[in-house]
Image (cartoon, rainbow, N blue to C red; front, top):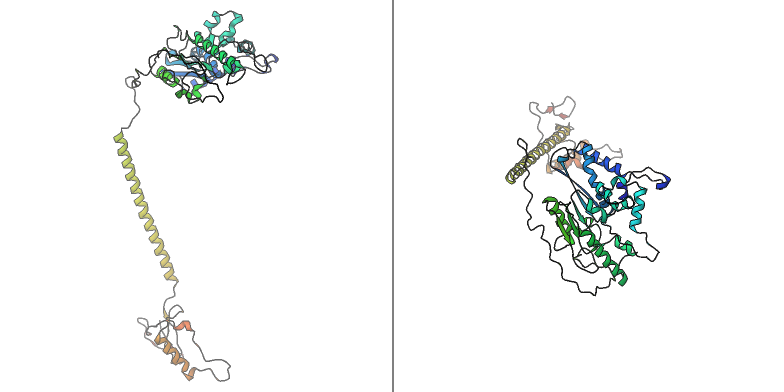
Length: 446
């Protein structure tokens, strides 16, 4: 069962459907309604809807696309506002009976399509003109690419490989390399594809395009093959671009060569072990006109009077704006650097001020009678010759020697008191140096 069946079915779950419900028709309708209501599709004039798919998805798009205008009209979208187009990548199934494989008979795709028609109730997507063209017993053909494509009324661009990488291995019962019988079957398959494409696009499809390379591939829009495979130097990308942007149609590029994978299939490597084709390749048929020979860029968009065009800045305007932006950035950088310098200086001065406040105010220590005065500089002196001489004189004075028998040494002065030169003692301003009321002691009066 292929995934495209979900696009065309409308039936409840039951034992006859293996307890599966198929609501593809309602899902597509709901998706369109959401696109119209939420994104405004078709709300303005000159809009386009490209309804596309690959493989089974392209088959589902092929069956559904002709019903879209009526569905959109029911959603309130004016027909003149929205142009619908289709791109079908590998939708072609040709009516060729499979051969018996190693595992037994292969169920033909034709029989599978007949069963699907009843299983999912796909009668709502058979197409009015196709349904009339075949009797009820053959309505399954309206779900089969070879028979349905001539009845598609919406403009489309279609790709169909002459050695389809899905159907050919399915009908052959295996992948290449093929023996002589397999290569003969592949040649017949190629003839059937080209015969099915011969009437396409029909006279009723003036806006459609057909592309077919003699290659072994499937779904080129999902691979580099979209650009790499060429038919007369034209890729499927080239054809769809000319068809969609230039409205060049009808376009038809069908490669004319005989032999398995005889085309320009540069995007696919040769299958390991594939035998070479002993037959010489016949001369190629004359190439159709190049769709890009008259290529020109799309015309500029024209709006109605009074419409406001989107603002487009010129290169000079963009350059001036960039220069102004750079100047603004530089000004902010300089301002930030200045603020950072001020903050750093303020922090340094604040810390220095707090440190100065923590240092005691220089004063004058009271000295013992007869001992030179030693300034108090935070408890630490700076030694020198004068200080050393004063301390030595003090230590040698017998008046300050320790009494005999005391068991101790004479009074000593710590070395840190004499580490640096000390200035001559002077009294603070306004306070003369004199004796204190106590016996034999000098003091610095404050």
